[in-house]
Amino acid sequence: MISEKMKPLVNNNSAIRAMFEEGKRLASIYGAENVYDFSLGNPNVPAPAAVNQAIKDILDEEDSTFVHGYMSNSGYEDVRATVADSLNRRFGTHFNQDNILMTVGAASGLNIILKTILNPGDEVITFAPYFVEYGSYVRNYDGVLVVVSPDTETFQPNLDEFAQKITPRTKGVIINTPNNPTGVVYSAGTLERMADILRAKEKEYGTAIVLISDEPYRELAYDGVEVPYVTGFYDDTVICYSYSKSLSLPGERIGYLVIPDELQDSKEVFNAATIANRVMGCVNAPSLMQRVIKRCIDEQVNLEAYDKNRNLLYNGLKDLGFVCIKPQGAFYLFVKSPEADEKKFCEACKKHNVLVVPGSSFACPGYVRISYCVSYGQIERSLPAFAKIAAEYGL
Image (spheres, one colour):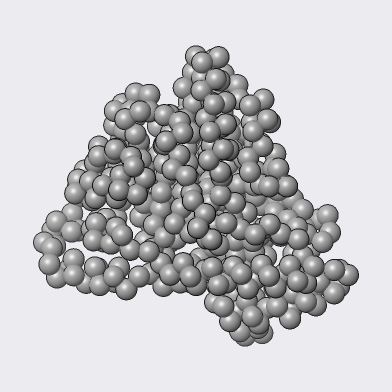
């Protein structure tokens, strides 16, 4: 009954979700406090109190038919203007409401821009390790995902290989910084060189290549690390943003696209993206949450809680002999597996009720992702289990 296009997706259901379901099964046996589930990037830090208050105030103060009604497929004009003004204040940009398209999270934003720009057979490049769904999103529109192998020393993009993999069929490049799963922030130098390569290739092939920056973790950066704003480096850039992490609202599915005036054919692209939003079935981003974003544009989650978790887990694992670069952002550790087959390591961890995700799920075997958006207490309780695992591997 199901389509041929869906069969491989069903057969290769996300290892992250599978591990999450395994965590629920183990919790029912051993008790939730005795299972250390580090599989899913589901924020445990509550949304700012202002978000809940804004929902109540909107329902009390704004007209119900307006709040719950249709609006432009690109979103409420005043919300889009508020987003643009916020970006301009923070990053020295010059956007207006006509550069902002409200979306059903960053995932929808990625699908919208890919549907807008891709013809069958067009190529989209991304850098391993990468969020596994990128491949599915590109294939949704009969595109081809081209993967650049990882630089496991720094986890900055491998730009030499990147330059070699750009072809006349290259239509887009997806980057993700701060990165899931490594926590690495792409440096200004990296972005400058990437932009130089893209401009040279556009000129060589007479094509337009869109740099798509996937930014759900933009506000989650530590130790004063700056996350460069990508539109300042390369004109043909589109930003995909989500409030899932910055406001702890993953289930509310609210985000936006930035389509700058500098992008080639920007007005045409914006109009096409607006129509793509409709024909994909989203119609528009959730109306109530758009109203919330207008009131809560300057709110942030408690980053200190994530930072505290980061330091406890990173230092704890490092002291036990595990190898990992310290993440600069997001809320993941990408840890080198003590054995070549990281899936076997995941199974060894599971025997101690520790659930981590294999790096092969991110096109980077030999590593595991450990999500630290959990309670501080869970990390504390898990360290003795990690110590037993380290002892088994002679670390």
